[in-house]
Image (cartoon, rainbow, N blue to C red; front, side, top):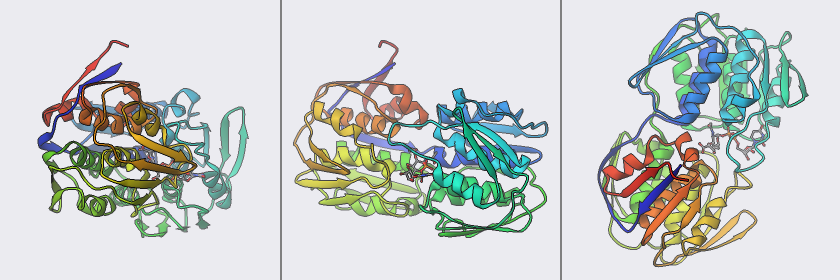
Length: 417
Ligand code: EPZ
């Protein structure tokens, strides 16, 4: 499947941001912990979420989608081995480990997959569960967790891992006593997970800070819930307008979740920032941002690094972009160079010398955010761009071509390989 783009257009109109993939994934995994029914009011059609629903189905958790409303019923839940075919598709499958241990005190899961942006080890997850008394055997590509001695306690994360923070939080929900996570990740998706669990009757305090306390409770009940908007999708739209030019109102975009990006963008375009929407206007070639580093929240997010690389590749001047989270997340640069970008990679530094124009080319999507970045590059470039590997974009963006077509882009999906 491919996307075909006829570039050189500016973007104008209004666009609404959907629910956050990276909040929905741990929240869906956490339904393992509850007895009863949930209704999520703002489901978004992403293949990663569909995959998580398949994993829940393995556990006999029913999920029915009616329009945008997703109904979850956990009344007949049964523990089961989470197999390789599913964990290979989505990295977030590893979150289910904490939920299964919290609910059943045992779990068997194949090693997770995900994007090819780096090794993505799970040593912090494993070390944390061992610190809470879990016996772990890793063999033949599976992780066998025995939680008969699982207990609450204090865990210090060697690195503020988002997934490890979320998985540990879920593990502590039904444990007697207080589980404390120190050096916890502070991403907004972690706050949304805590908000969902507390709405179900849990007692989680400090989410969003580097110290999270989980006071164990007996059980959780179901709830109706609306998942937070996707800050990375919102940032992608803002960077697309800053790159291509135009005037767009991005609705359901929480400025407080993108302060780092907005601080960079204010020199490149006009921003009208409201509490839940942002209007972005760009009508001239921006100046390069001299230095950008990706770091854990609230600093500039690694998930917007490829999209920012595109903006810098057409800006005036030189930008040094440092990727500190993942060791193999510069795949976009090699594709952008086919379109005329001037980028030199040295270890985790990308030196980007801005060029006046990009030119359409046949490019290949190497991971989810690379795909979003190449769509922006194709919209900006002169002439036609074809993107292969579009299924990787569908993991985290619902019908990306339709969203940009509404803003005036000439873009369409074709089944022709
Ligand atoms: C989450 O991945 C997101 N995915 C990623 O988004 C995001 O890039 C990442 O957090 C960082 O913000 C989901 O939420 C589903 P980490 P996660 O554990 O939890 C190292 C996207 O495009 N590490 O915070 O896997 C790891 O290698 C995706 O939506 C260990 O060394 O990220 C990386 O260098 C891509 N050992 C760093 O920590 C571990 O046990 C951050 O990883 C765990 C992580």
